[in-house]
Length: 410
Image 1 (cartoon, rainbow, N blue to C red):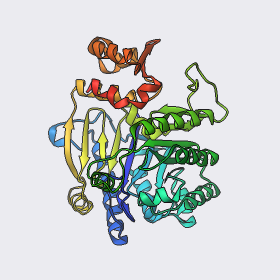
Image 2 (cartoon, helix red, strand yellow):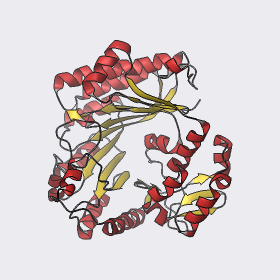
Image 3 (spheres, one colour):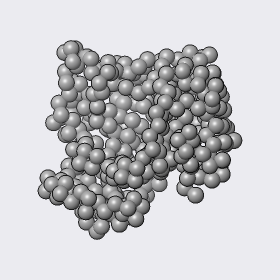
């Protein structure tokens, strides 16, 4: 039976970052308590439905691909700021998962951490709950950049967070950084990269800034309060991050993600690592490989291999619906075989190893070359993709311009 992942959305934040368009809300202790109880109930409801062979789409007659209690090998606390709530609340949600699903003893259980909202007491509580991976939202090691982003921590807070995580026994830590910020120079980005690599995290998520409509940063740029980032400069920064991470012994396994190779280093002709890192984000790999995952909490998304659904966005409305019915589904969509194949194609191409054309045809019944031959030829001529040894993957240029590739398959 295929193992599933569980995503648990914690929407609370001290303050919304200028670039953020995620589903967040202000933190209140009493609301957080009520929310955690609601999420625990939703987890139990999904467990009951799956045990009976149903899904959150049951009113449409959809049946689950699972029978009995599904096996779970990843749990991911995202947000928002999961580290802002009490450790006991997170522990109760891990226990709810264990009560309703067969959670693997060595399951990867991740928490996203804001360096401004943790304490040693919380760290010990996370470890006691079974949380064994931390993803730290550093974003920058330059205080003026952090202030401009409305981050509530300093660079020194980030360094102290990493030290405290190590002391608490975390041996699987990921750091997030953002490149291409307004007014950010190559020298600034090179400094951020050096600082991150010197800390030797097991994993790095290195993102190019995306200016999302409706964010504070979008408004600032639109009214001229901040300059629009330079696309050519951002492209140079992307190349810098890829080179620096590879040289430091990290596998560049997804467009924006790098995992330490430890003693497994070995390089092919393109500079990519030959063996797979053991510390890739196993939960995020589910998104990129079309594996099933269940999202709980307000605004969370789910995919069971046949259908997608999304929960109610507003925190209070989510709580009310879950208290009433056990679920809070807002939108539902059953996917055709063609939809599933199209999604799987561009999601899998995010991985630097690309896709095996033969395996893809066996799994989805689609011959990619036959269906998209003309577009593939155009993209190959443009130097954005390459096909060899039965595999299709993005080139280095294609990784940078991936959205231009993906639109061809939608």
